[in-house]
Structure formats: structure tokens, C-alpha cells
Image (tube, rainbow over all chains, first blue to last red; front, side, top):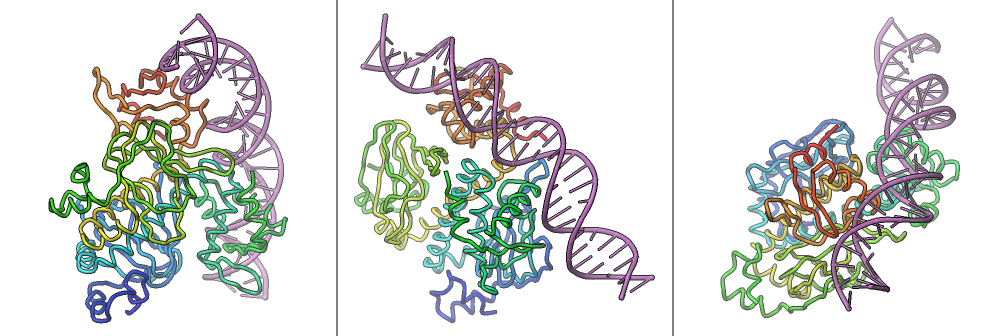
Length: 225
Length: 225
DNA sequence: CGAATAATTGACTGAGATCAACCCCCGTGG
DNA sequence: CCACGGGGGTTGATCTCAGTCAATTATTCG
């Protein structure tokens, strides 16, 4: 399992250090839709996506839930905290078939103590995520659903896009429902907006997939006003 | 300027290390309302609040802006990134009279390299902030304005609350407008909600101040449904 | 005291949620 | 091979929360 060596934050380590670290990780597979952990569970482990896509969700008491992010191989999730009473702040669920590596927070903390460079890399990732989360707060506070969906599609294309048959395909299953829960909206509204985008020729889309045809026009919508 | 020694993440350092670090910080004062930096400016420095309160804001292109957080002494803000093209992701503004200490990102990075324990502390703060930001995303996606305002008042009381004349006073200037921009709402709606809370005896409030009278009832509102 | 800034209140409007019906795939098993 | 069942998607009608526009009333400060 030398997937670890390809992780951005372990890249700087020596091969022998990696072997030692590798031994501490456990590999687990998850079927599509399977829960990896639930928000509120005692937080004891840190995970790394080795293969597949992982959804991070947050649940409101009224039943609605929010899709915070879709993680791709190389990204980490779970708990960094050593506090014994800590719980996971979000729910992690396999979006596709997933292979994940995991380690206890205690062991991971030991690695961070041994390799300060790794800690700095992790810190950089966390900074970027915080900025992205604040960006999302801004969008929810100030933009229309149409603009938020345009933004979200562009972000997804940035992260998950592949060029296929001449168009920019978002390479993960993506339902109207998921799009809605990424944008603080509802299935019906997401469907209406997508129908509009489709008839305007901005996107092409079907059951659980979306491709972007006119990136620049989507950008214009996301910025307008 | 031994305010540094009271900072959570420098607490573990030896006195002589602190003296060296202290020399690298520069002290600046800001009048209420003065900008410390603007979102989009080249990001070159990290700041620490020494005295007063600092607002972190984000601006949308359509003129609305969002109040992300009010920082109190001991909290840091600005840039951690070494990337030379990086820009500040948010705007920092003095909310009251402020005394801030600052250091270049390069110098701060050197400190982190020298004292790995400090890096871990910074990482813990960033984790907590990311969780809080995701919490806010959830609230904006799933809760009503009334619920979001109740939540926000409780959070502010947690952070800034002081017991005064028998009530829990939020110890910072706080206008309807600011409350609105913390909750993704408008001045008028925030005013209506506050009027309702006031006539129900949950809060007491006047020009730029709010006190909480019935914490448990506010909690009930924030969780209802 | 008067100007400026904050807050309130009312009337109107509209974006988007909700409720409901229906279609269209796509996989499964008879 | 086809029927059928269920999940995803679409579309329409209606409703409502909160935004907008506008006028008025505090409150603070010079």
C-alpha cells in the first residue's frame, strides 16, 4: 500500500520513514452508500481516501442534510483531535466503492510530532478548507440558488472534471438531490435550474451525471449582479 | 509586550524563546472601524489581537457582506501562507479600538519550524474554526432566520458574554445590521426578530447592545422542528 | 439642540420551498 | 423478452418566509 507515498503531505518523507508509517495504517473497503462514520460518534481515527470518492455530510435536526464536500484519493478526513471526548463533526459516507486507509488519532499525532514538515502540510490543507468553507458561507448568504449551482458545478468540474467526448464531464455520480444539498436548496429547485441550464445549452446532464458545455457562461452567471 | 506569553499557542515555550519571538512582532493600533487589511490584498502578514475586538468580513460582488467572526484578544488572523501570490481571503477591520501584533508570514513560518508544538496548537485552532464554519453552512442551508439569530446570539454570549447587573450581556457593540450580516439576513428582518425576542422577554437590547435574559428559551428556538 | 446614525414598523413582492402528479429510465426476475 | 417496480427526474400550482422599499421614530454625539 504505497498509496501513502503519493499523498501530498507524505511526499517529502524518506522511504524508510514511509514504511514505518505505512505499517500503522489499516485498509478498509466500503460499498457505495456505506457509512464510514457518523457525525456524533466518538472520534478516534483519521482516514485517507485511497480509491473512490467519499462524501462528507452534515445533518440538521429537522432532517435536511448538507453535502459539504466530495473527497478524492489523497484527501484526508475524520478526526485530528486528541481530546478523548471528541466526536466527529460530520458524517463520512462512501459515494462510490471506496478504499480508505485509517490510523488512530494518537498514532497520527505521533507522526506529526516526529515529522514537523508533515504538520505544516496538514496545516496548509486545513487553511485552504477553511477559506473554502467561508466562501460557501458567503455564497449561501449573498447569492441566488442559480448562482450557487453555477458555482458548485464549476468547483466540481475543477476538482472532478475529465475531458470526455469533447466535453467537461464531472466524473462522479451526481443527482439533483445531491446538487441541492450542496447548495442549500431542494431537489425540485435544483432540477428546475438544471433544466434551464440545459435548454440554454450550458450543460448536458442525465440520470446522475452532469457535463459542462459552456464554462464561461456558467462563470458569468455565478458572478452576475 | 508580553501579551504573547498569554497566547494559547505560545504558552508552552520557554521565556527566552518568547523574548526572541517577541522581538519579531510589530505592534500597531487601530481606531474603531479602521481596516486592518482588505480581502484581495497581497497576503504578507499574520496578526494577533492584543487588545480590543476585530471583525473578519467577506464581501460579495453584489455589495452584501458577511460578518464571519468577531475575534478577541489572543486570537490570530491574516495569512499563514508562504505562497508569494497569496491574497487575504477576508477583510479584517477593527471593531473597537484595537491593538494588534503582527509578523511576516515568513518569520512566523520560521517559528513554526523551530517549535513544532506551536504548529500543532495552530492546527487545533484551525480545526475548530473549520468545524465552526461548516456548522454555519449547515445553519444557512437548513434553518430559518429566527433560528440562526438565536444560535448566533448564543454563540456570541458564549464567547463575549459577561454577567452584568444580573443579565448575560454580549460585551461588544452589536448592531442589527451586524447581526443580519452574521446570519445571512437583512437589517429589517434582524430588527423584527429582535423585537419579537424582546417582547417575549428572551433578550433585552438597545442601540448596539444585546443582553440575553432567557438562554434556555433561545436554545429551544434554535433547535425547534 | 440639531445632525447623523441606528432602529422600528408597515405594505408589498418575489425567490424558492412545498405539495402533488407524472414520466422515464434501468435493472431484475418471471 | 417483456413486465414491472422503484428510484431519479421533471413540471405545475400554490404558499410562505424573508427581502425590498419607504416612511417614521429613537438615540447618541458634537
